[in-house]
Image (tube, rainbow, N blue to C red):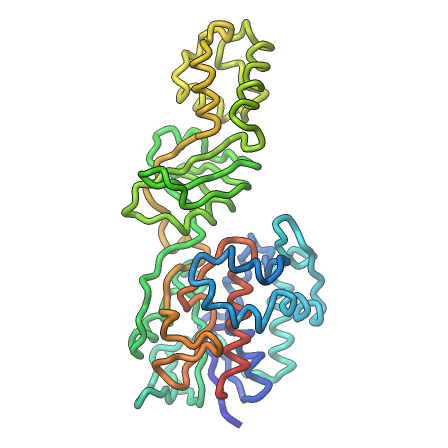
Length: 407
């Protein structure tokens, strides 16, 4: 029986090892003291394992090389993921946005299910086993050299070492270095699903403010919209974060002059919002302007909106002109921040970039450069929005690599 060495004990690596064990002897190498260290903290520890949307819809949520993943996602679908964990005794639930979580809200239940299946299949798991070097010749890997000076020989190798985000969980990019040394092209890693930074001095005044049901657009210097979606976001001391912002971050580039435009009242058109403001102004006609917005906006946002509206905060509401009111409505529909970039890649949820998909067979995940090497998960140049899509990509590519290895 041939021997498969899987490098990396995240979701992609564990699934690759399980799939490969049907036909091969499998050794799973993990540099950390336990499996699934990054998986443990995903979804704020709740583990958004996949998404319940139709698999055909997934491609709309994958900005990074979606069609490379066609075979992987259709070979091992979200339905397969749900069945896999439910068969292992993990009860699942579907929440807003079709996100799928364990009913217990504990990522440890997902990792525990993986571990039970690895044990049942008698897969040898070596923890604290960091690969330092790959030994290869004639376009074929012979063995891996570990940090403890052990050499592990194998017939086939599946690289599942993740990207460069959350390095404290072990994702430090060494897999990309291995692949580059073996002759692969590496698309420069960039942070994805990461908070956005802005230059406004008033942003710190909004720190901690969470907004629900707002619309966020990212527009370029010519006014072209690069991203638009609806959901939740959060102001921070450096800019903006939250689910909506993390998804938007994929279009942000340091060298582009971009703006984040927030529609604070997307359920109302301009004229409808104008009527709402007129109604509030009529109700508070004898109050100062700064005291007239309590029913319209969160308290923390009022001072900033008043300042940006350029209406005197002490002006009586019944003295506000039609033009001033219209400008206020425009501000509420186009609350704008100047984007300076994103936070460091170490803070990203996932990494965009990685091993060039042109050098990987999408039907098997096999390298086109090294004949007995396969890839799975975040080490590949693929990434998706939040919502369970990235973990599903890891599981799908892991299953495909493991089930097709050696064919």
